Image 1: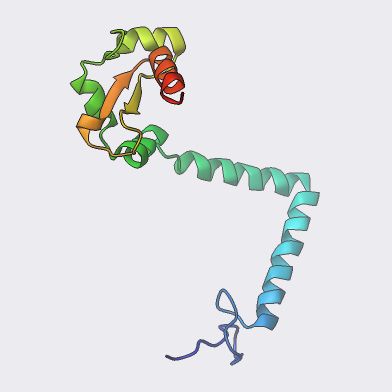
Image 2: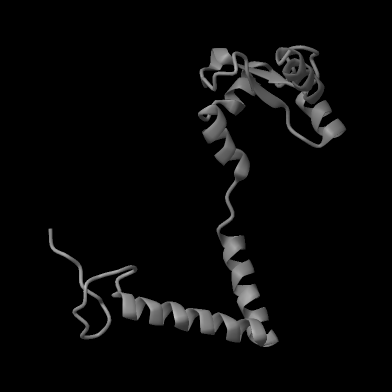
Length: 139
């Protein structure tokens, strides 16, 4: 395996981190730290930096509901809610009633608490039913 060398101009020292040898890596880190001190101390530069940060975050927003659905329910959350006719399986509260009362969507619960994301292991519950089920299942 070929060892990497520093990418700084004509330096042929052994690679340390981010493409640089120890000497040039420290110089780069020092430069960026100094640059940050300059930005923080100048209100105009700092505001420009904040605006760039805000613009980046607006353009890179992620739909957290879709993301959490994929992580916690294997993409089956919405399918489970549709399967249960958009109602709580215990008390029958509809999705619209739930949104109007608590300003949150219905919960999807793993029946056996094993995080198995099969549709037969998922059930749709309203907030109070989910809280009471979780409370009593821990006893």
